[in-house]
Image (cartoon, rainbow, N blue to C red; front, side):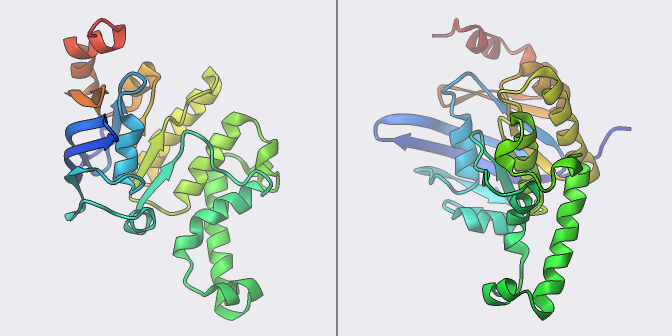
Length: 260
């Protein structure tokens, strides 16, 4: 059964970003539709992570605008982006290595906690009930990601592939409408990649979460993406369905290293 892809929910318009004299992104425009898996690909140094950093408020582009669900902004703080329903995983894991899997994923619930820190610390009244509700949601995510056996294990003791799964769990704890994944399969072996692919597809399918994905493994991208945008040296050189992009001469040249 083919899934139903909705209207455009994220619109990136004419984004340009420079660091000193170096242009990281030049006049980039593309959109993301509700419920799709949208891949951003390109050789090293193409500007992929810079693009994600513009979307989730880490960088402020010098030109252009980004609209999410009809709200346009040229600059947005990261916590505001999270409040709007956009969550992010990072290439370099930013987990709390000494804390358990459960506690790491719980940190993703912070934005959803209503009671103040004093009540949370004392765990009294509404704060206790609220924590129980958040903990139940975290347990569902742990079950979903099949890491029940590691719930109490400090994250630093887990193999890399499982740490990446915890990082995904923490992003899911925000219950995002859109999930930005920065190379979720980097450094994984074949089996770990297959597992992560399955989880990304399940997040998209079961939770209805829109996914924007940076990934180097072309076979993964072509298998799971609905549409692909291709960057090279900060410029957009391709955009379309995986099959269209695969046959694009400019994309082929960029990947084979013959365009420069």
